[in-house]
Image 1 (cartoon, rainbow, N blue to C red):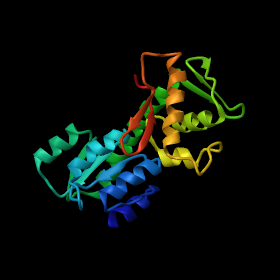
Image 2 (image 1 turned 120 degrees about the horizontal axis):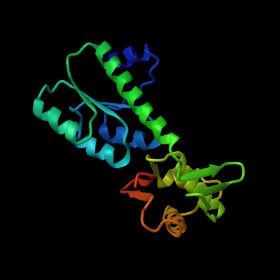
Image 3 (image 1 turned 180 degrees about the vertical axis):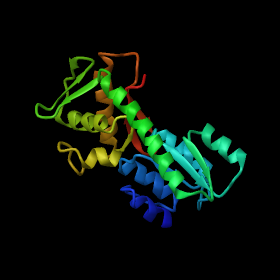
Image 4 (image 1 turned 90 degrees about the horizontal axis):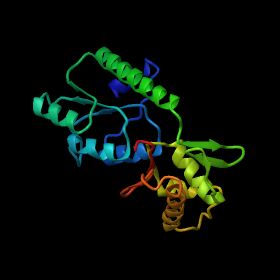
Length: 212
């Protein structure tokens, strides 16, 4: 709570989760810029949380832990954390590290956006192009693929795909999402059969990536 209040002074919106499972769930529901991860958590060690985060997101992770152990630091960084801060530390240093990581991340994102986009959406015309070719999509397929594109490189749950689609009946089964995803994959594969752009995220849903 103290750290949350401090970061808020720097115009940072903070959402806290003491339970790692709740935190992982929140990660699939919101677009966050960065995670501050404590290693001492109920039900799951923080070091075990890192690979689970990496299964669904490339979001930057700063480990903030009272466990001042070089082994924890090495394992945390090897598993995908971006920084490690042993407690106690001056919160001003944390703010500086957050800004540094976000600045670097945003620079990478801007360079990525500067590259030719594989998928292009025309929201008004409700059309999607892939590698310069129009995909012949049904209304439901457009809904699903456009949501995946808008959350590119981040996971989207089956439930979100189902209930936020304008052209899928709310009474439809979650399995219908898998069927629609399969049809979309087939249409993408007609243009590029060598790469899988839509990847399943076990127990969550799907992720669209252009990192092939």
